[in-house]
Length: 83
Image 1 (cartoon, rainbow, N blue to C red):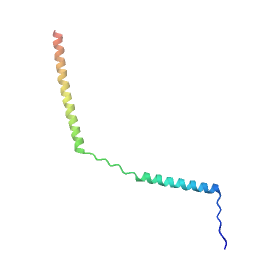
Image 2 (spheres, helix red, strand yellow):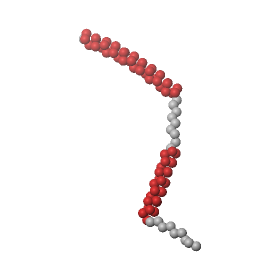
Image 3 (cartoon, rainbow, N blue to C red):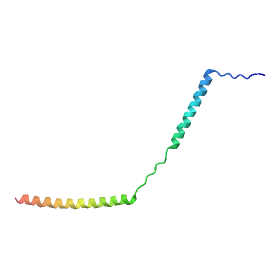
Image 4 (cartoon, one colour):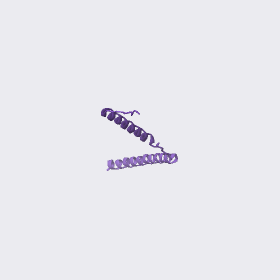
């Protein structure tokens, strides 16, 4: 019986092992990228709309306060001028 002898030289073996390592690394890197979960965001619309209404009410109140302060300032200026 003849024996089959396979001979590999060292550079060929090193290149083959490096190629196997690179392919294994890329396969695991791709798998971890695909595993990431999908981001889901929920929004409570009624809470958001209520916040918008409160902001509009606050702005209206600020405008009223501004008008009252301006009126008081004008009145005080008149009093100072008369003095």
